[in-house]
Length: 57
Image (cartoon, rainbow, N blue to C red; front, side):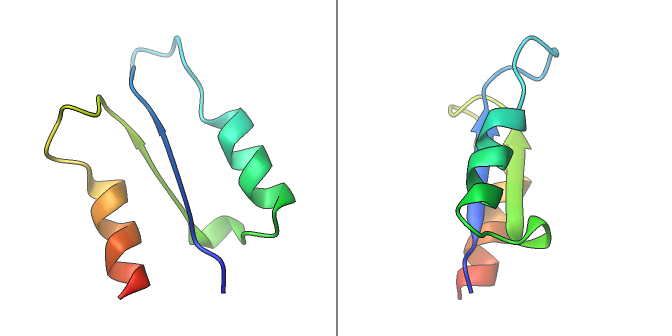
């Protein structure tokens, strides 16, 4: 099983996850196994990353 994670640092709409999601799907990662965040890397609260790490365990 492949698991993917995508993140953009600006949640204001100026950045999109589309290219990252498309690349993960092209790499045969199932859409329901792609976790994502729209948050700065400085933020501690990244729920998508936490969910991704939980799935890896």
